[in-house]
Amino acid sequence: MLFSRRKGFVSVRDTIQKDSMDEPLRSGLWNAIHICIWKQIEYSRYEQYFEQANVYGLFQNYWHNYFKRPLDNLPHDIESAHRVVRKYFFECKWYEVYDFIEFTASYCPENMAPEFIKFCNHIFEKELSAYRFVDGVLTDITSEEEIASIEEAIDTSSKFSGVNQHLKRALALLSDRKQPDYRNSIKESISAVESLCKCLTEDDKATLGGALNRIEKSHQIHPAFKKALSNLYGFTNDSGGIRHALLEEDILTYVDAKFMLVSCSSFVNYMIGKAGEKS
Image (cartoon, rainbow, N blue to C red; front, side):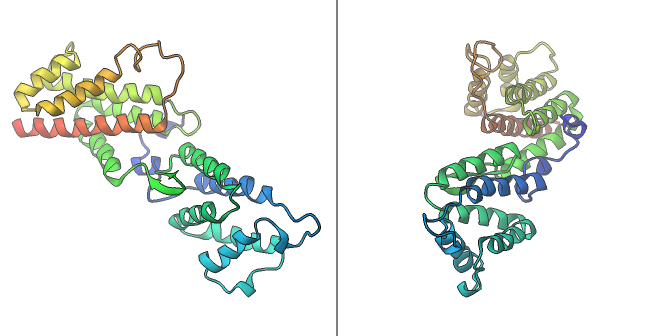
């Protein structure tokens, strides 16, 4: 893991790509097109002309429905058409790349679409895109509100060094693009909540359950909110939970770790706000 991520110096918006797209993400998506579509080009049994290729209909749709260009300007050879598409892909805006990827999934040969979508989702997860294909449509999996919640928690917890470091570590483990550690990211997210509870109760030995009971009385936490957090915390401590070695098959994903980070960030923001009301 790079120093900047390990130490939490990379911003949440640079980590989770929602309103931007770096070169590894763009290149990875192009490779998905290259491997799943361009490398699968076939011609009719007797003709090797562009018009006889299985992707000719896709290129016609690019020209007519996507680029909105005259069809008689569509090149007569596949190499020239490919160059036009490639030039556009690497020069267009980040959000236009998503448009193009979604359009390609809709209009490519039917037998190519499942593997193409699967490959794209792999790249989205690997490069921490905030989007995924769901039922053939690109969908937000990380909202602006979730990003803002993580940012706020890291910012406002600066006076609680333990809380701040746990949150930064959780984000760093989640965002390591070479070797993400979702299990330990979840641990760090929960540890941030524990650390904050101990700070607010001024009891380093307090368990989260005990701390919540005391905070509920002193800061007027709604019982339903307390129960929700207790249930979430219980997930990490039951016999099959994160903190036990009994779960041999690691099935945790980016979505699991992101959910825990967002949830714990929201709790940190809520409790720091509550504590501020009493100061």
